Length: 337
Image 1 (tube, one colour):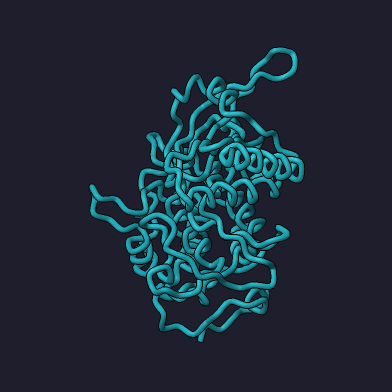
Image 2 (cartoon, one colour):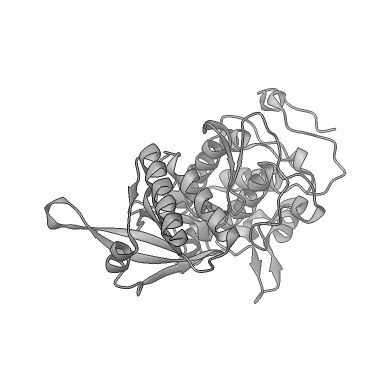
């Protein structure tokens, strides 16, 4: 009796959420059928496995979808599921993955979102031959715009907390869409920080996560900076085979005037070293150890687009007292104290 009541309450809550967000509520059976009993795996995340599915639409045709099935049913997962549905359901931007619906039936919690055929940015960047420099530039700017939307243009500020190439999906035109909001932290617009457990992925995690410090949107800026270097170099943030930490190597190349080392064997990028230098400088600003020295994503987007000048960044360590403000975006030279 109690289980049936709980199930009915869950379904009522799910229906209410769906109506509020204009989402489709799926049953477990519908998604099991759509995914051929969860046989075609697309990827794995911290809280679930993503499967390829096929939904029948009007006229008898099929549309391909991605179904994320939570694989560890505990309280944290339930909270993550509700958070992901709430977050993805309320956002609409061309550089963010689109939620189609969800299932919250008994012990089964799943989300259904659009399938993006070109896979992850990680697969795109680290293949050979490397992707074109023009495509990589467009992707870098588009991702920045998507993060800017999350930080400043939603009704509630959203900190993603796990920006990395594996969480960027590409559509048929290689337009990037930010995915995996299971780790997202929502902040009301009048809040500036939140306290939380360490989130994110090694190589992309901002230093403040390890200091029990307040977490702000600047953690996403840090992660974006690491990823921007990956986009420039087509090299992984942490390369165990070559024993290279990308952010250290990139700063050394910048400091020593050896930026061409970052793009060796990349003739397109070598012919556009002004942009390479600008992107590397932006990335170094983003990975400053002191979060107050990092630009916000509006600053980053404007610098990427060439709207504002990019000044030489300091060593990414806490001893500089320069901080970013609206005045920093002036077209006049800014003194770095």
